[in-house]
Length: 221
Image (cartoon, rainbow, N blue to C red):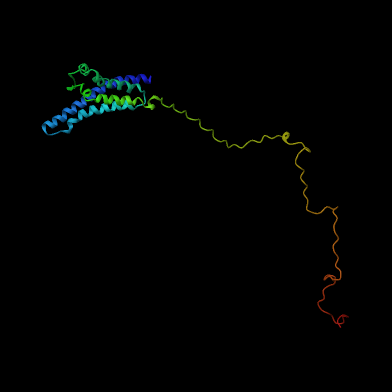
């Protein structure tokens, strides 16, 4: 479907461009010639032909740059190039076939003017070159589907589902039994070494301390 619409657009834009370029070139040329003739100028006189040329440029730009289909610029380019190419074969026959004496909004419409000066050939060749752009032959990329949002993390604590049957059987465990708690005293069956005895040394606690000798004591002589 896009090729069909582009083909129809090329058929419509080509003759409209021819008419607009003719009006713009003829009006601009006659205005400048009149300025030279009278020796003065008035720039507002160029507004009307400038509008014609501007609209033609916008149409050609849209047809040549939009990525719709290459058939539009191809058809329009061939239609605009053909009259000038025919000038190489039978120039008088081509000029006789171009309508003359037409007027648009009271302005003359010399359609042979852009053919004579080669403007149509220039525009048509530019449109033909636009069809060789690789990007114009590709389809628009498909719109990527949005990815589903990731599920929020569940902060709920894991439920403990252990039962009594999940415990290992008694006596068959691989872990050794834990030793019973004690106060650190040795076992009664543990042999103890005898304490060493003091020999030749009098213990200071064998007799009460002597603070002074009393009178009549046999040692106090």
